Each structure stands twice: as C-alpha cells, then as structure tokens.
Image 1 (tube, rainbow, N blue to C red):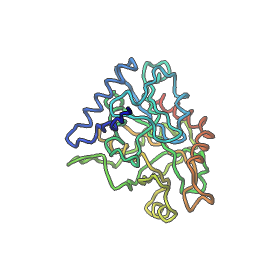
Image 2: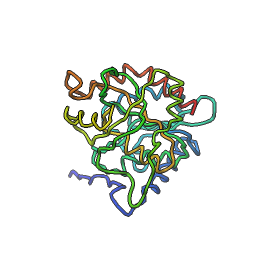
Image 3: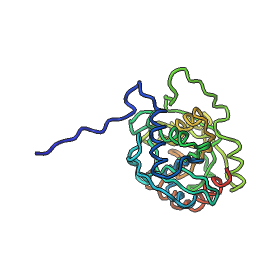
Image 4: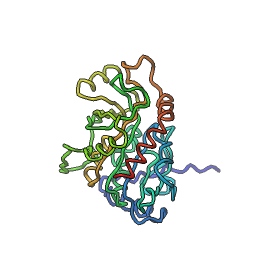
Length: 281
C-alpha cells in the first residue's frame, strides 16, 4: 500500500504568525550548526554568482537550506541549496553566504522571499550584499558586466512591510558601500534596477516602459529583499551582473542558459570584487 504524504506546511501561511520570530529560530539553528554565535555580513548569491562564494573566504560550515526553519531547496538551476558560514580572512569575523534565494514568482509569499534577509539580521549581521543576474538596458554593458545598484523600481505591486510600517528608502543602497566597491574596482558603473514579478522574461514593450521610468537593469529579485533589509537595520550593497541585453535590445532570444554562461565567464572578476568588498566593510 502506498501512502501519499501531504505537502509540507508553509510556515508563513498563518497571517497571525511573527516572521521575525521565525527568523530568530532560523538564526539559532545557524549559530548551532556553524559554531558561530554571530555573523557580521551576509551575501545573497543570485543567478550567475554561485562560483564567487569560494573566493570570499574559507567555508567553515555548510548547512542545507531544508535544515533551517523557513528555508527550502533551491528552485532555480544554477543556485546552491545550502548556506555557508565563511571566515573573512584572519579577522575572526564571519560571512553568512546564501547560495540561493526565494523568488516572488515561486508563489511562497512575500514573507518567504525576505526570510533570508531577516534571518541574516537575526544572526547579528550589520550589512548585506544582494546580488542578481539581470538584463541590461544599456548597450555599453556587455554580458558579464557587474553594475552597482544605485536605486530601484519595485514593479511587483507588493511590499514585505505589513501594516503601518513606514520606512524611509531615500538612501536604501548605501553610498558608503558603493564607494568601497569602487575603490576595489574603479571601473564599476551604477544604475537603477527594476524588479518585475516574473517568471516570464519582460516583453520589449515592458523593457521600454522600465527604461522610460528610469531603469537601467531589469530582473526578478532584490527590491523586496532590500526593503526588508532596511526595515531590520541592515546596510545594503546591491550588485547586478548583466547576463544579457534585455528583450528588444538584445538581437537574440533570452534564455536561462545564457544567464548561467555569462555568470561563469565573469565568476573570477565578481568573486574578487565580493571578496575584497567584504574584507573592507
């Protein structure tokens, strides 16, 4: 006789639950499994950034996502389904590196999307680096070009903030951290990132709309995490890897394989950038 097990309950389904309390539970598990009472900085590795984790520092502990409350296996090819506790040089400080993120298009809800950010704050992190793979709207940014996020357009029609939670986003992406990144790599450019809901790629008309609104980059992540990060007091550095020209700008059809290939080609530069930046923050 075969027994069909019900799907695992989503811990974020109960609107009366406290997402910050769940983040604290996750942080306690991370502390136990990593042997580190606190972490100092977090990194979220988006599409194309996976190989850079090895260049940040020595991995002291690897924790499967499904072992930590509120986390789950990677849903997108090219992402790692684990988080790492990484030594930052010989400083005694630790980086918490998330090998994947929950995307809004997965349908798990906004609380799940920003759970990693809230967990990072609960572990003691004071800063977070949010990375992503994205489409570029400026032809001079060839695939494989990292771009600092100066500001964003949240085109998801939602927010991670609930109730009368008013948060100032004027300087959401830290000018101080962008300056540190430019010290490491003076060739870095800056731009405005627009997040669409996905999972379909943007149409040429949507790309032109975003361009007219002021966007330089388009993708399917980051803005909701950045808002939640500001709410819990984290200083934020956003870095996009242009993996392809956006629809209507690119002469060829878009594909996820192209995203991964561009990330592999740029892994060395991006890895060195993150390693140096993390060491200086």
